[in-house]
Image 1: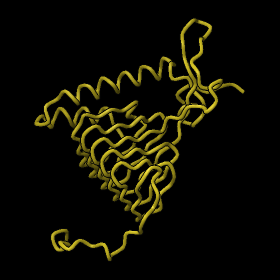
Image 2: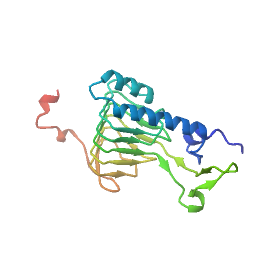
Image 3: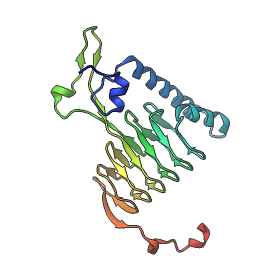
Image 4: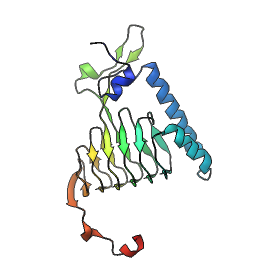
Length: 208
């Protein structure tokens, strides 16, 4: 069957060639924007916000990002309102990444949709007819519900959906779906408790 463009194949979760010129140009643009953002003073809110608007056209109001940040494409990531990301937020969005409202990301959180074939015969770098080198990759989407909190050094693997209101403990590697309103920790991350009204803070009156 005739192939769609490499960009369409990528977003559809099929094997694609990341050395395709259109994809290289998109990644180069995102890399330049990330570099500019990371080099801009945190006090220069106007410039930082303008860069985020260009890098992440699908973001909502109130996005607060400390930086440094690292995005493969940016345009394949959708972010809700009032989202906060601490230092070293990494999103390799070769497949759609969807983040709800009021999500908090601790430092060194990585969202990783890219996948590589298990067999080396399918995974290894090969040479095209024009002499250029390439490999085949594919991606799986990541969906994060609203009102989630991610501790530091959390990694989320492609193909995972994390339900609304979850807390993902520091250092966790999320390889499977996490149900809503759940605390999950570990490598691989496993649910350890449901979050209920019994978990209300002793300082709850401050949050009202």
